[in-house]
Length: 314
Image 1 (cartoon, one colour):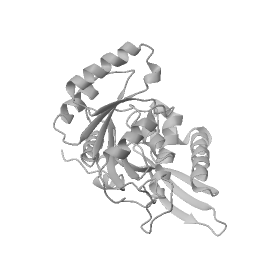
Image 2: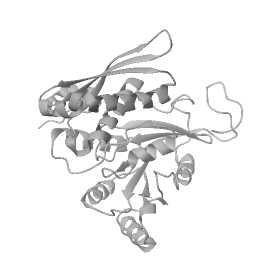
Image 3: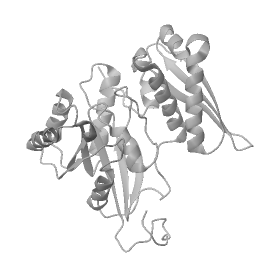
Image 4: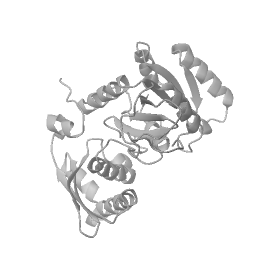
């Protein structure tokens, strides 16, 4: 944050003109979008998981760099959709990208240009926003000549304004990217109070943390058609928080997987999620998780609205 006294409107006092803008982070599944947004914001605002395609709706993280407020939009990964939920997530990703003053395409440098990246490049050719390229996970590429060739191939397709070599997981190169954005976003007043780091309701973030823990523990044992909702949130007199959540699956067999033998899996999910929430809320957390079967929820418009997604028509 910039030094100096705060002005009356909550913006940090500075001789520089205030700036504020939206930065859409787009890319193929598992390119590192959520890891990057968390690194840019400096705290967790979005789900991170090795299982691809876990971000379902655009998530906004907010950071301050000098006199600039940067609003990062972490979008779902863009890929060839097959199911209704897939189509909703891809539509959501492009909708989030359209909100960006700057669009940053993040590419897994170790994977290079695959069909998903090619599809994104093709669609970006008609975009008017400022475009930058982020080559992520460069620490995994030993042959630096390979990075040069990849950069040349990508910039031959799109005239990117800047190219950054980063490792979002280690935060290498992230500061340079953030500094660039501070001067690239438009001059104008900040959209959010200085202390805000996200516009996600805490109830939603809590549900996402539980969903992330489930995916981490179960990996490929569960499909993506799993949903978590925070159904009750109470601040108790002693300052602790009591949270009730429901995990929705589509079949009894999936319910058995989530519960685990003797309830072992769901107890571990609850323990890990509770510990993470305690660190975020800085209060004791009492977390109660229930698992229910909701057949065909992937075709229920109401479920899509709850996730912040539009319901795609056939």
